[in-house]
Length: 474
Image (cartoon, rainbow, N blue to C red; front, side):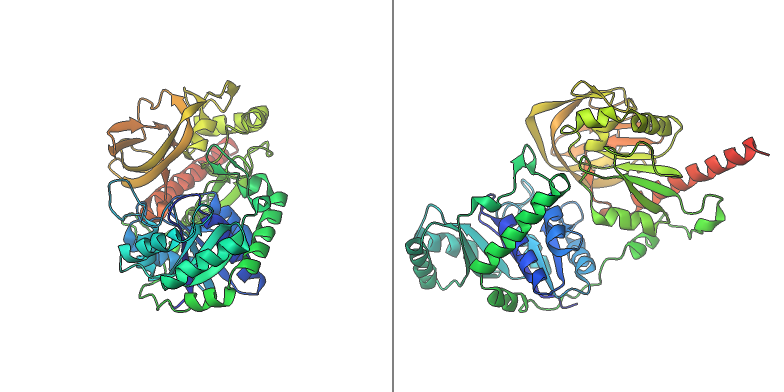
């Protein structure tokens, strides 16, 4: 496939990648282009702003969690039919998984996509030195093609002239200059930007302002021309249907064979549960499920016919009082789990299933209590399933990511969910009856069998419930 594409990178975090990437996505979308938004790494929050800017799902490209071999196919899946793709990088251009060289770095993603890189440089405290900085990044890895620079936080016309002169001497094109504009900055808190779902009206205004700023300060024609220099990708686009059918545990399914039809899998959403990968719902659907979203802050019951429950990541600590106040739903979730219904809970979902969160009653599915902590737990993990569950068979290996500023005590149950093999050895999480709950965020495209297994568990639960209804009403 031949999709024009750019990777937006930076020397370090905080340089303005999200500002530039989101602004470019919005500005090009306003011109009538179909723009495919992507984010390198495991981040869940930035893709929400990307989706707002483009009207398409923000998709992650993570070479650690999914493997380098899936980066280009997942990109091609998301970008199919688009006029342009913009990939926002992670951290600094060459920063990746700790101790693993280039793995999961923006540079590796750019090379796997054969995409030109635009370097966003915070120029607020330098002038001619910018040329040395950019030269170093351009020459560090000859396989990374640095196509130009966007200067951010430029203070004045004089400052801009000095920066342009220095980069002209270095032979590096300046594709944009952005002045300091704090009014378009999105608010942050303990885990990064505040998600779009929590501030939608303000987020729309912010994205509009970013588009205006980028349109005024960047050479959109030059950036589009650079994107069009990317060569065709020699790979097949990833397909959730193909991924499911290729799973060793795949069996042809006839959703109409059981009285319940396609099993309903309820996925938590709303402001408290904003962390999800688009491919998860696609894989569940391909495996035969009907995916229905619900909001634990507002809905007092699970969706009708729920036979599987997925509660992903987010910020339940911010909404603990509201989640606790929704007692009808808490009882419904507890009852579903007590009846053996399959539940997959990650991070925020783990906290929601606990007995309490910061002293506020939660669902009480797990005999554990959670609280906020001053310590940030962050990093990639290599994990193996140590207990059979509705999500994973014992021995299933996955790579994942932890990202939280909470603790749960105890940290694991009698049957832990995962055993971490790297960077440290420990067990973590809970498996009990149909529940699999853990801090670990995973990307199911790396192991589609988990979606197939979970859907099968939901289908079995639906069939059992239907049989019980029939038996109770002869």
